[in-house]
Amino acid sequence: MPGVGPTAGSGASASPEQPPLDLEAVRARDPGALAALFERYFDRLYAMVYRMLGDRGAAEEALQEIFLKVHRGASSLDPGRDPGPWLITIAANTVRDLWRSSAYRFERASSSLDADPGYTEKLASSAPDPEHDTLTAERSEIVQRAIQSLKPSFREVVVLREYEGMSYDEIAAITGENATAVRKRYSRALDELGRYVTKAGL
Amino acid sequence: MTEREPDDISAEARRARELLARMEAPRADREFRARLKQEFVAGSLIENARAPERSRTVGRPRTAEPSRAPEPSRGGIGPVPEDEPDLLHRRPAPRPVRPARPAPPPRRLLRFPKPTRPRFVAVLAAAAAIAVAVGILGNRGAEWKVIQVTGTGMVQADGEPIPIERPDLLAERVHPGVELVLPATASMEITAGSDLAMEILPGTRFTIPPSPPRWFLRRAELYARGGELRLTTGPTFYGAHLEVHTPEAMVKVNGTTLAVIMEPTGTCVCVLEGEVMVGARGEASGPEGSGGGAMMPIPAGHRGYIFRDGRTPERADIRPEELTSLARFRALRYALLEEGTRK
Image (cartoon, rainbow over all chains, first blue to last red; front, side, top):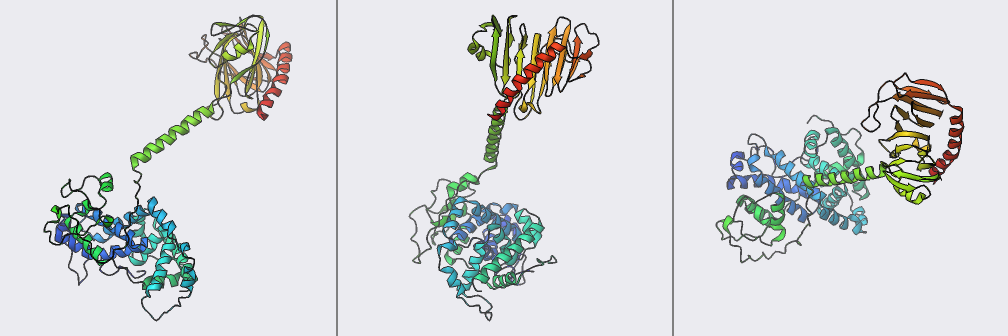
């Protein structure tokens, strides 16, 4: 499994600590079941969406859209299957819709790294510290910026692969491409990320 | 997972992966999370979140009162009164006071409507229609021009007499589909761009053909009932086809200089250069006429004769007087056609 896998609060199937979800009740839009589904997946979806969009406001808007779709499509949920991939697919499609929107592109263009000319120097001054397991806030921001520097299609693959632990086939099913194309894209995205973080001195 | 990783991962890329792995998961704003959960569980997200766009794109909301005005909340999720037991029947006003914590600046992404499939199809159809229209209009062949008239008398254009001395009036009537009848005392020459030049001799009766289209379906038909026509093709005729129909014969022209002489006993086709195919056809001369008999090749310097009485077509040497006339016509008019190409 590449990367770190699903983030906190996630889990495609019930872990020993988490009771199984009553998906039939979710289908019936039972408030308790919906609340449990939300608790189980919200953090995972939020992390995924935030990493793809790189903006808290946009992520929140996307999450509203995602959970609206989940609520609306609850009756189509297959109770015999893990709802994780279903939710991730909804989230990925929603983010892709947002990327395609003109307003999003406009905002991205106006808030690029170029807008802060001193930022690169600031990045370069951050010395790497391999002793820490997790990155400092500043360095996390640098990595997040690196992710944002990728083309959306690259970013999507990296996030799904590194953080959702999805296989190339699973990603391909979401993006509508073949697995080989996804693998190549992932490889190129890693190269671009590598160049970015090297330039930033990480 | 059994699938392989990219083989040629660089040290930089490996470092990037390490950094990605060490990133902490971003956390949502707790207040936002709580509100979203509340509305998701209650099913009121549908009404709160950007109701106008939703109603356009996903149809009617499933829950709650349709008459309730949407709250002008940040990003569509407004704070929910804690003392409200039934979220589906909340009062629309007054709006609860926001918490003291300063909220992030409102983010209103202007969402343009996504192109729907019917709209896409409509745009595609319109574009295709425009392309077809441009193609059809642009494909039209060159217009015919009168370049010389000689003699006296009246030319009949679709039955309307026009003095041959008035080439300006004549030029107005020289269009595809118009039947011209020349008197026995006059002749004229017309050209279509640099495709074709035609000399119409006295006493000829024929229908002006369309000139061959420019790009595709480069085929034209000429119907003649009597007299004599001399034809020579220009540089841009290459790839086009002209069929000349007389009462007895059908002549297929691909690029050549020839004369079609309609006589009382039959049609004589004299070929100065290139090669044409000649065959007998039905009695009727017109679009409804159908070809009959096998086609016979007539090479340069020869003539083919299709008899009206149905005898076997003959092939012989070109008539000497026609050889001279065709050579002169060719020499004069090909230069004109070439000049048209250079313009």
